[in-house]
Length: 325
Image (cartoon, rainbow, N blue to C red; front, side, top):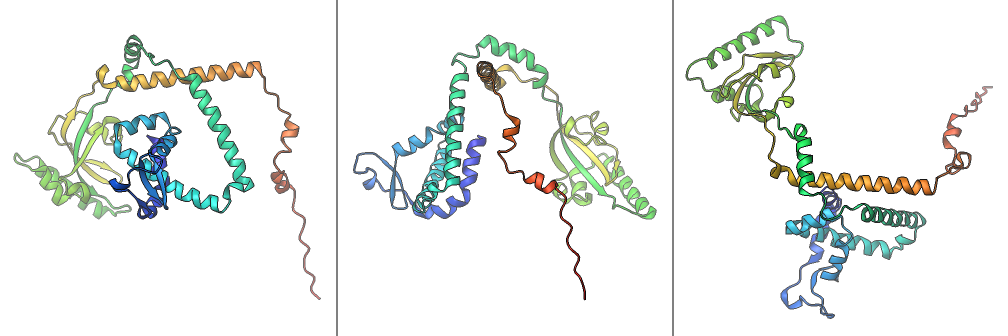
């Protein structure tokens, strides 16, 4: 998915400008002269199903799989491709592909693509891997890492303590906090209503103090001891930090648990296949380097890049002082 987001992000601005140039054809024009179905028209040029398929063949397999599950992503990819063709057409018209630095980058990209594709093919695990037994073994081994920690749905009342407050201000705020804590201890106390009227954190205050679900480790360390022993519906004592006072309520609590195997099977399969591919790739490269050891002439290598740093390290010549007559 990260590859797909990168493609979409890269062309998002361009798509906004080019969308007016992309005209989806009506049914009457759906077939081009050679009989291939036309997907769209961009810059006066028809783009066919065959062309889109050819371009998608070079997309990461994970992205291809996601496209089959979500047709909306295919629409975004297609628009990115069409926009790319607009830019490519203009670049070729200006002979941009003949610039020496572009030729070098294209060749580097070609070699990198060939190497990566070859390594992917060599290291790809068999379709039957992992077996059900291997998945179960990995699940049992990974249980500690799969543990979902205890979670708290919290609401808070926050009373700010301005930095550098004098003793009188500190005492005034302390009295205010004690008053709020006293109101919360009353039998029919409405925490949400008090949070709306008293909390200095207005965003959560407008929601009755609700700040959402947090795991134990996500709770600020200084606040955590006052929260972990709260029962559902209980309110903490006021907790003083450098920025002010916090009074929290545990709206709900989810005990820690380990997900069932079926809930994480796909994740485990993906991890096992990725580990297997990496091991196969590393083993292949290690064998290749043993068969063809790499020897580098460090002295010659140092001459590849101009010695700009050495020039910078040389002491600068003294600037002659002007002579006044």
